[in-house]
Length: 304
Ligand code: UDP
Ligand code: MG
Image (cartoon, rainbow, N blue to C red; front, side, top):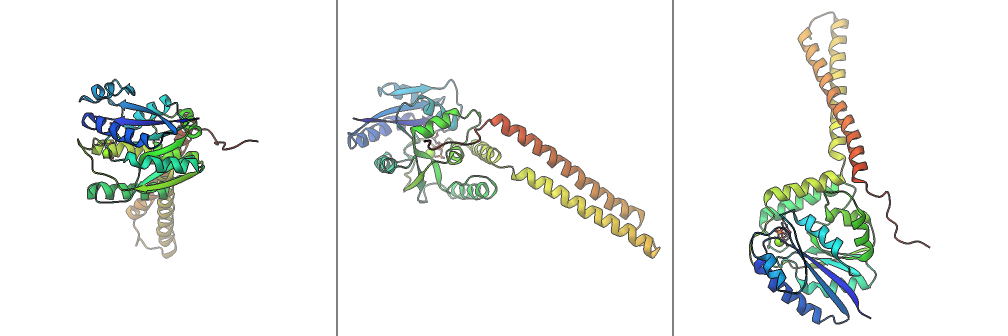
């Protein structure tokens, strides 16, 4: 009895890497004869010959009409996969296929999610490592999920997790967060990332910012709470200031605090009030946004 494992590979302008990656995957597959591997390459609207290379492999392939982004490619792969487990890895050989036996081993031990964590070698530039580190720190501090710094979209997930992910209807998916949000039993395996063999990182600064924005806004209400909180603080401060100046004027019967000063205090109070109202209204918008995301209220692991 062999079980099938799907390997999904988002590829954007990876023409030079496709063959090499497929060869390395096949070499790993030879070591695991008890499994049948299903390869699904997703060509995310590449402008090089990525699709041409995929076609020569005799594997499954999905070609997007244009560049829709890494997370969309993962989504397409997850929906197409038929295996009992799905492994997602980048098409640029930065995620070593040689780690696959270890991922499968942990899965066999009962882990439904096997994440990977790169042992932070000097592979990526200093700026990328620093920004990634800061991003995860911020995300973990203010959101409902925790993601290990050094995580990438290189992991194995059990069929049950794939099915749950495929049920999610939100359009802007941040898989790193969603897999975590679902729950399930997870393990982490660390690896030494390799240098990109060919081509350049296609995660432009803009794409990275956009991913970070989706990650933050879809898992955290903290920025808006912070705005409402700041508004309330300014309101209270302005109010106290105005009251103090007003009373001082009344009690001492001097005009040490003139009308302009009192008016300034009043304006601070009023601005605080407006900011608070903004924050409050946004809280309702977030509530609506959450309804739109339409995430299930809970995910069941077992039933008797
Ligand atoms: N990728 C994609 N669509 C994009 C950008 C990237 O499918 O619009 C793929 C890319 O081919 C690679 C993976 O996503 O397999 C990660 O991209 P990249 O290597 O550029 O990011 P980095 O490793 O620098 O974070
Ligand atoms: Mg890469």
